[in-house]
Length: 424
Image 1: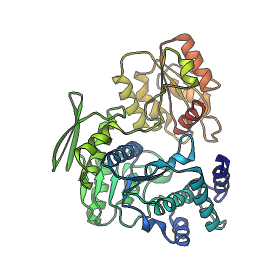
Image 2 (image 1 turned 30 degrees about the vertical axis):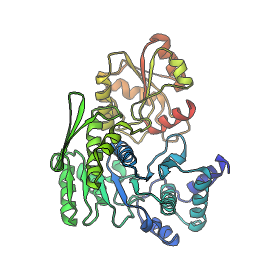
Image 3 (image 1 turned 90 degrees about the horizontal axis):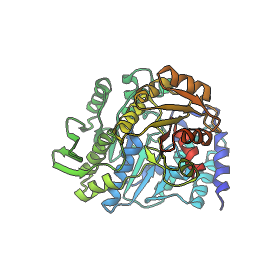
Image 4 (image 1 turned 180 degrees about the vertical axis):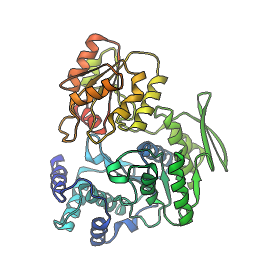
């Protein structure tokens, strides 16, 4: 098998529905039924929804479970460099041969009927998980929760809701309460739900949903607490106190994500060594990732090169806090964003930390903002801005003016994926 084999099937799958996003579960249930309901044959499922921190929280849970000696399947989206990143079988990225096999089976079984790309590829992931042994399955919601293609597990082991903020309003609603109602759609009757820090408006909806379904609440500030003290992470719940290293993932917001991961691990009965592994061994690309090798790093020379895929207002705020905590050095942004995002909301918190912003269009992305539009948005929030034809050109221009600069490529996971492919 070659890499083009799975790519060819994925390309055919894109043509099965005229829309990229069309939230309903009818098509998913139809295909699952034809495949003999693989979702009913999974190892115990941990289902994760939320606006921010889903991937980081999942990465820490996985690191903790593996540190506990457990075998873990994991599903996440979108991918950055290769589709295979979405599906981990027993801790390893799915092989090309196995991916091609399950994609082909799902495509043939669907028999040309309408189904979105995310729906059919999610079903393929579930099929792979059902056919391979593991101790746990981690499922990350793609969009929302209630009507997301992953929301087909009748009784997960535990559900998780990370912090909720305004995002994807055109699909989920224009208020925190409406968005929270969609996220809370993963809560199942009688199944414990771990809840990260939430705005009051969102928490009210989550609590009401959990109460209606008799789902025990394991909530930040109630059943568990987490904080940074003297360069350590301190976590406390009814089982007692943990004094752990800070998360390997950078940023104050990762303290809260770590707390949710620890709450899950403690609920499952994991030991302290597993909790320490969750902090030290988690890896999550394009979340304030320091790039250390590759052609772009060579161009950066004595400068620092970082990559982050956060793209909404809450992500902009978290990113600004990370930058504020780094050793002082002029920080220049290279930014490309989608036209579906709150660009000014994302950039406003970064104005205090950024010496400049160079805007780029995201290569091969139909929904990219033009570099000129991104540049104008940066100027509107007070960031000195210009445009460049490419990330490479932007980096070369920055380094020529400031050879020891800190350069952060940011604004979209799609841009981050392009960078990881090109800089690999």
